[in-house]
Amino acid sequence: MADQSKLDKLKKLRELGINPYPYSFNQTHHAEEIRNGYAKLEGKSVSAAGRMIRMRSMGKLYFIDILDGSGKIQVLAREDRVNPSAMQILKFSDIGDIIGVNGTVTKTQKGEISIEAKEITMLSKSLSTLPEKFHGLSDIETRYRKRHLDLIINPDVRKVFRDRRDIISYIRDFLDRRGYLEVETPVLQSVYGGANAKPFKTHHNALDADLFLRISDELYLKRLIIGGIERVYEFSRDFRNEDVDSTHNPEFTLLEFYEAYGDYNTFMGLTEELLSGLAKKMKGGYEFEYQGKPVNFKPPFKRIYFVEEIKKKTGIDISEMSDRQAEEIADKEHLKIPVKNNYHVADALFDKYIKSDLWNPSFLLDYPAYMCHLTKDKRGNPKLSERFELFICNKEICNSYSELTDPIEQREKFNDQVAEKRKGDDEMPPFDEDFLDAMEYGMPPTAGIGIGIDRLVMLLTDNVSIKEILLFPSVRPEKNQAKDQRKEG
Image 1 (cartoon, one colour):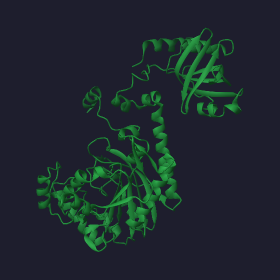
Image 2 (cartoon, one colour):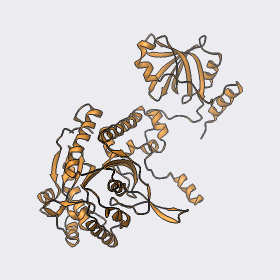
Image 3 (cartoon, helix red, strand yellow):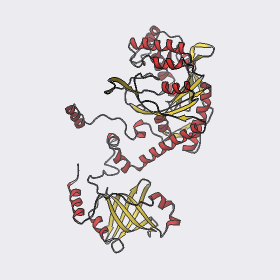
Image 4 (cartoon, one colour):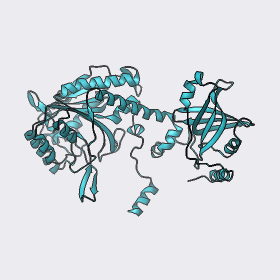
């Protein structure tokens, strides 16, 4: 809500003929450019703009700190050296206002690089009071609900999102240089698939059809492989109707890429090359600290075999576990899972006995075949599938397959998923006849991978919560907002 004293100052500015909300301003330099380029800019004219975050006066001399997209710069305003309206603007200014400054680059007696103002322009009169830096925006939920304030008050937050941009740019360049084609696939899908997850459902009025927000773009990217695009990738916004916690957000970014004529061995090497190079780019070397503990991205990454490791830790051979055996094991191991079938029990045993040991990058290899409905069987052992997941700092980062290309076998595995869904596993996707139709035209040997961009950014920016690296994470509606929504409904 607008502050009355600020509304009064806004009125005064207008009465003085000063437009508090002009159309544009010619910003020639940012704060960082001025600081870094001082040797060449000293005594030169510049135009800068930013939000006032500090203002103090010493008689007829004002010291003002403004914050722009690159950082902070000090402005000096002397009454006898600025345009006539400048002092009136400053008289009716508040912390939080956005101003433009034309002046010359100089240094104060204390050596601080500054702009000595010749002209000051009001660019946006703030009508709400900014919170204090150290006391007013410490509540986590407020930071996420009002990210605009978080970005103003906490400059370190801006760096996280610049780093996120740099991470994505590095990956995109890595793939482009290898001949991959970036594409876009549908977010609204009549049949969702490519992962085990609950979808969000919507309705298309013109088509009079129920649609789902995608949980993965996998089956569409594979259609492109079938169509002859041999290397393809997409940074996709995916949606899964699941719990919100430190590593899960219902809306997230997943990178998926597929390559014809490769297998999961191809992609283990490619993943090592991509992520080790990314670590060097972002952190200056293979080894750095995550949450105070060293992690080392130097290849080759460790390889662990899923079934063997579970057996070593528990004595349980999960490779042929039936649903009945799974239920007995779940009770014996006190596994708190919604569905006690072989898929969920194997996953829960991994979480209980193995996951906490996977700190440095580690490939977890060769899952039980019943956990992999889109994957080729392990060569020489049909009980297993050629699948790996990469874990770093106890978090799953990547999931990769030697992709199943036999349409008859794929039909059988889709039927298995439907059977599990009927038994109560609501994370199993529905049967996708259109994808099978595409497969029947012939799909080349293919490797594919999904990389969780949000979790990767968490690692490389030293954050433990996914909400810190999403500009607008999912939060519960505030009570008043929820009431208003119910009234509107």
